[in-house]
Amino acid sequence: MSQVKIQSALISVFYKDNLAPIIELLKANGVTIYSTGGTQKFIEDQGAKVIPVEDLTSYPSIFGGRVKTLHPKVFGGILHRRDNDGDLAQAKEFEIPSIDLVIVDLYPFEETVASGAAEQDIIEKIDIGGISLIRAAAKNFKDVLIVSSREQYPAVEALLKEKECATDLDDRRKFAAEAFDISSHYDSAIFNYFNQQEGLAKFKVSQREGRQLRYGENPHQEGHFYGPLNELFDQLNGKELSYNNLVDIDAAVCLIEEFDSSENAFAILKHTNACGVAIGSDVKDAYLKAFAADTVSAFGGVLVSNQTIDLAAAEELNKLFFEVLIAPGFEPEALDLLKGKKNRILLVKKQNLTAKKQYKSLLNGVIVQDRDLVTDQAVDFKTVTKKQVTEAQKRALVFASKVCKHTKSNTIILATENQMLASGVGQTSRVDALKQAIEKAKSFGFELQGAVMASDAFFPFPDCVEIAHGEGIEAVIQPGGSIKDELSINFCDEHNMAMVFTGTRHFKH
View 1 (cartoon, rainbow, N blue to C red):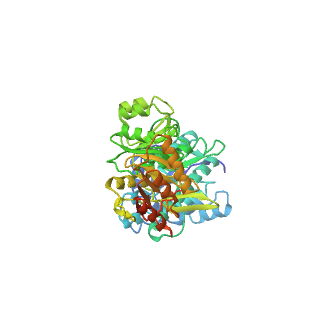
View 2 (view 1 turned 45 degrees about the horizontal axis):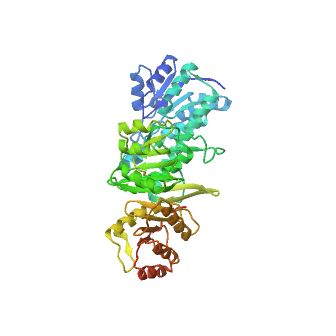
View 3 (view 1 turned 120 degrees about the vertical axis):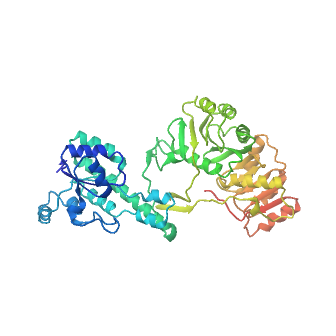
């Protein structure tokens, strides 16, 4: 039976907005409607006749509404096969009607969890009848159309109008696939809620919002993004975000969130690494300091600020070719100026990241870890040298550590208290990382006398502090933990350098 004329429908929904036009179409086509509770009243208010499910099953809604539709006359009406003589005979024997259309949605479990509701309220939003109806109707898509979300109402209305209340097999299969997407997502959300406490070593992630990207990292690779990106950003200008844009944006946002909103922080990133980070007296000042750290790499970069972009900053930014600018807001004059380049992506960051886990595909599986949410603070410093760090050095070490945390290992960051001077990025040797940073700092005209050095991991040998001392660096921050820590400590003591341990390693691979 490729085409099915809808003669009966079961409707039981939590959300009723935009349902009225569908009811009108069913009524106009003489469709028999079964329903329950509040949905029944809503349908009757539209002037349509309704057969209460209780009349069909001869059972009332019981246990506070926990059991309404769980009955053979309901599920038999959905699941019996119209081309199976045995099923048809049993349906006739037990007076089970055919149900050709099921419109049902699920209790708002995720929304209830997000609201901070009490556990009992959350538990009551675990749908039983609804999820069962969805699975039953989707399983029997050869005969039944399943509408499992209010988001589908406009498409269903158009379908019923076009085909005069009939459906084709392709229609029903498509809606069945969407129904299983909804049901699997719902079950994953419930499991993940329970697993917050149980901590079972299971991995379930479901994202129902997705977009196809122009391509992946390279043009020959297909790419998609899954997730509610519009919850984080409003895009005010520019071309569609690419795979590489998104990877860089993630790195930029993670870095800028290390800085308090009371600080005018600005960062410029290329290939997920900061080529400039600074704190300034205003946005323009912070940008110029960040730009000064690497005026070459900034070209085509991803820029991020934790302050609203004003006109003065925009006038400077407009001189640079960049891919993306992220900020919590744009003054109207600044926005007008920056929108002068049609491909320039301008994003308003609406909220901070809330995810507590990170995961990526690896080998033949997925690797999962907690996000690194530790930010090194001066109060946690353990001074291991005879020389103590000054207050200015403490601020510089905190600043350098924040940048170091978000830079590819092995890494070294050279900085003052409000400006990254240079970085050594992703080197196989920490000595190479330091040499790279020193060379880069000098190439952009920075004097390293009095600067500080941050390392993402411990020094197994004193070579890095020896080189740093030779360049005039006076204070060092590192996690500590090498069996040869004393070698670096002794060198610092002998050469009037200060060094603090944090006890926290910040590898980033």
